[in-house]
Length: 171
Image (cartoon, rainbow, N blue to C red; front, top):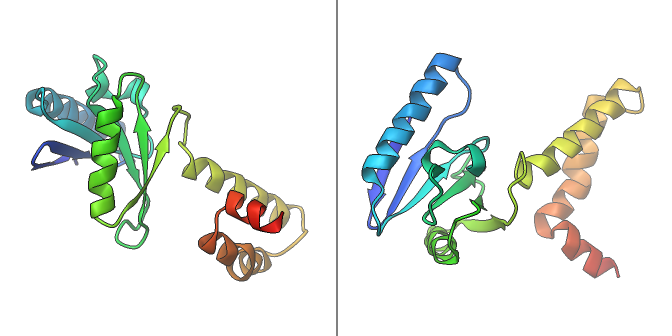
């Protein structure tokens, strides 16, 4: 379902993925209608979705400098990352205003500069999942052993320092 929260100058639209086609169409129309009615010249609009891209965003048509996608990671109360996906028309001021607000809420925004399917996090996660499945399917390791390597190996390291931070530390 689509939920709208107005707080000062920011409106956040929560869009839940999945469900049947009829329900998704209803949600898209509700988001479009609400966005068009609520969006004013002084308000920023963040659509939360991991699947709705700016170029296909019903609230971003026509293009608007005050609209962006904010992709939270589940569970959002535990994971502080929020990907901020700018559209071709999204202004620097809108991106900074939303990032600033997210930082005050204890979140860690990462800006996606160029729109790609899956944004950043889902693409990296998909690559790992693809390789994990391949290792198990090809008899290289059991699912339990693959999980053990991730959980007690580089998974912990990546939680402390990202890929490029590790490159810098390793030399």
